[in-house]
Image (cartoon, rainbow, N blue to C red; front, side, top):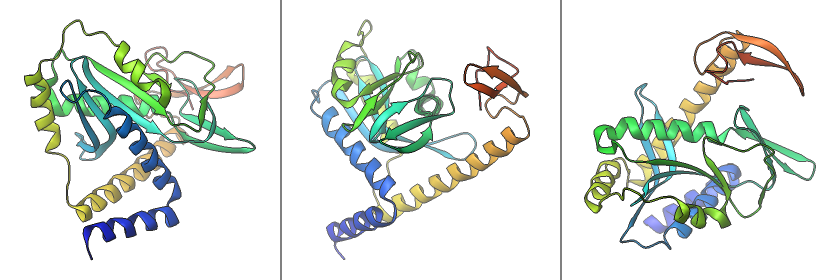
Amino acid sequence: MGTFLADLLDTFKELLFNPASFKGRVGEKQVSRLLQTLEAETHILLNDLYIPKENGQTSQIDHIFISTKGIFVIETKNYNGWITGTETSPSWTAINYKHRSYFPNPVWQNYGHIKAVKEFLGDAAADIPFYSIVVFCHNATLKLKQPIKGADVVHIRDLLPLIVSKPSDNPLTKFRQEKIRLLLSKLYIHDRQARKIQSDNHIRNIKSTMQERKLQIANNICPRCGGHLITRIGKGGSFKGCSNYPKCRFIA
């Protein structure tokens, strides 16, 4: 079977058996095409990278955009409807009429991505600004009631203006851009079957981590810092919060 037909068959299987994953891929392609419109001489785009972490697992990153302004780590979300959530809430919500979809806090998610990239690059990324961006695609409407400090959360139409607005006080040289590209490009898996195996392993590790996280919360252990979870009372009722607040702001 030719590569084109094999890719087409995989796409059909993903659309049939995992529509959420297919929808996510569509959103990533929309963002990738948009980023490619910026001048190639001063920007380098890398998509869908699996960054190895110290625990042996991987961090899957949608887009790494290397610019003269620094390194942009971009997480793409392709949900329909109103998007609600706060910087401290473990999950966010997509409200589409009466249907609600819940997904992990993308700000926390991208924080982990940037941490993995920094650890992997080491000294090569020293003193380079990192920018965390969470971008929602066309069918989403952001309804965030509180400002987000740990990342820029934007609609796709505002992505390019946001990147352009970032300061360039100490421009990243072409040499350093290329060095980072070479280091990260080594992680890209070109073989289609090997990428499928990598993706399956990554998803399996995520599910295992989520189960471990739920077990920790059930035992009143903060999954972020290992502190003790205590019951607190807020405007919306009772919730579990880390006893190490404000150093750790985890809530469940």
